[in-house]
Image 1 (cartoon, rainbow, N blue to C red):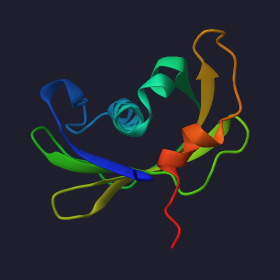
Image 2: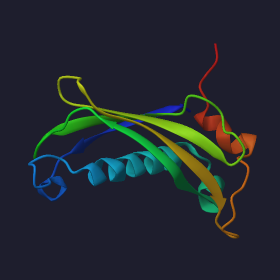
Image 3: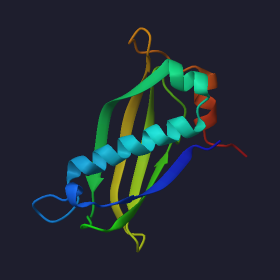
Image 4: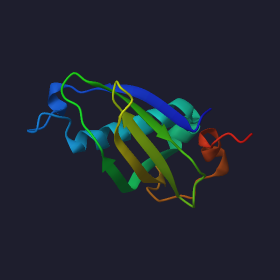
Length: 134
């Protein structure tokens, strides 16, 4: 288990805006896709079935961009444990030359699917995503 997760995204024609590069909303969608993939890959199946996550805050720094056909490496990290129902995810997107294009910190809250209520993150749910000490 790991507090980080990565994957590659490719800028497709539908991701490109009038300025000829990836639209800002696409970067946000990629953050959500990466976070969900990390959750599904590492959480216990019963936790995936019982809980969902909602974003309560985005802080995004756009430092560069890419055009159609470019590949970007996306990394998400959880650097510290939850606070009640919430925890922060950090994102870094880099281009093929390892230049940082986008950095973000998003705050997520855990929701119990059955009730729709925010729920304090139980330690057993958080454990697979916590930084390894040592």
